Length: 305
Image 1 (tube, rainbow, N blue to C red):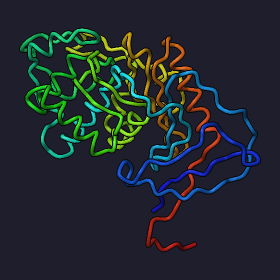
Image 2 (tube, rainbow, N blue to C red; image 1 turned 120 degrees about the vertical axis):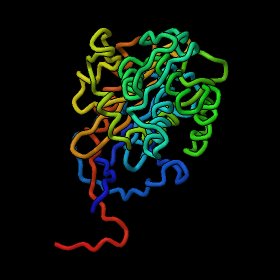
Image 3 (spheres, rainbow, N blue to C red; image 1 turned 180 degrees about the horizontal axis):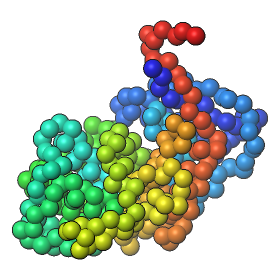
């Protein structure tokens, strides 16, 4: 079998923007790329991104293709929920919980405010529907309900979030809640968001939720409309999460796949919702234009004609 790695497509060895690097082995155990230039295309000026913090990576290898203040610690708003969903998917994979589980909403979950699906105290909803609500409309009440279902209490779940972040090498990150609602000390970086996004996209099921544009809950009584417009406006986009608070600004972590190449782009701290989508699309365009997935044989693989 073959695993993709990156070959930059650069004219005359041109500089595509900020120097690219790789995740450390602790952060990305699969990051053992063999780089191969595949020949020049057209040259392009240095990529200009206005977001205070931004990053573009290739998902399989973890190679960083562009970065701008990628380790600056910033409030991530609802992008936090990438970690919430990651822990849920890993718990499902480990057999600890099931998508069919019925989750009973607590008072704490019902009182979250912000983006929500208006869970009532004692209301029962499947774990699958709660995760869908998190993915599509960034529901805070659903996030807390999922956290409590997994760990018994949001505080215990937050400890799990921070432990998982440490395991992934997310050195810029400290979580305080499962939602991303404003809280002192709740910080991460564009780099760390890319790291946890890279883990989440290893779970194919999440893309079924992230690519929903419009759906319903409660037997059609409540409509869900996706907060990520790139799902319908950008070819190959199948995730991930928007975020906004006054302190965080407009944020987005997005992923798209074309011709076997999956990219993850993160922008943080923008002043306008429309601009975050434009900036993210610019990053993805850059990646797909200047890089291509190259098949590389695995160690000890016998190559035949």
